[in-house]
Image (cartoon, rainbow, N blue to C red; front, side, top):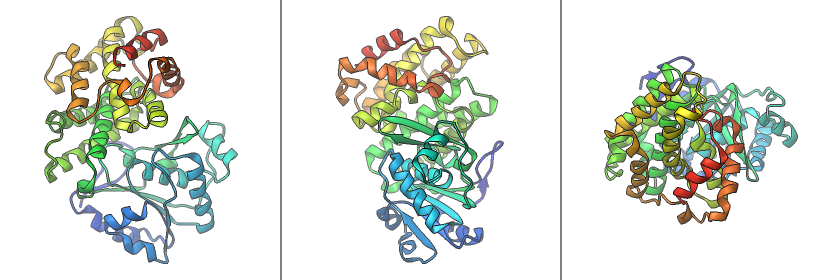
Length: 383
């Protein structure tokens, strides 16, 4: 496999069918004598790395949940401090990779970790020399980004730091063959939202927009078919698009669709990609309607409209048809486009607005200013 190293400051990637077979050799070449593996035991068995369970040079940390809690992460950090690994390997979905990133960089004490997560202090130095990430799903892009998400109760924190960036990633589309259908579709939605949000993000630049458009155009075919075809070529295209979208958000970060998704996932158990796309359907219309009056992008409303038009062009439709198309996409993939179908009550919508606007880094990266009353009106329309 040939490393794909497009762009500036990108994570070196080994990509392609069968790439995971190089994993043991990559670890050996790294010179690591103590490896901390962040994965589930079943995940190691499913991917052919059950021999790590008995390897004296490896320790497994598997005590974490989807959408990981800080308490889980701190337990992994404590194991890191006692095991003193040379290398951390994260193998699994986005949660496993996020935990691996956090375990590499956060101090093991709760107060010190929270200080890092809230920007009060930098992470303590660790002796971990490398971080190797191996995704078994296509969509999160975590394998090529320098940030990770962790929850403490209902509060979401982002660890955004160079220590969260992998020193190498191995992306093998064959690993996604056993993904359940709901995981496959949710991850594909996440990649789509990454592409769209990065395209219009206030932090976008020509390089990020090139990655985002590459992902968006590539996803339009499989998603337009409702992911009815999950053959090896389609899985490879999904992995490639996830990689491109991940590289885009590594430059720009995400915007308001993600800001408003976190509470849906934490409170109602809505899968992350589904929660993002639920919000993208109203947010696209909001940005389109309000760009002229509420533009926060210093490049102006014309720039924002150009990105909105690029999204529509990828689907071959007019911009005003995009919200309906996104709602239909949710339905085609087996999910409802209505918030009420996930247990969200009308009375809860103001709290949903407050939570989304409270994610200031993501909401503030939206190109159009978010007015609480107008956002509430938009959420009511999809309730």
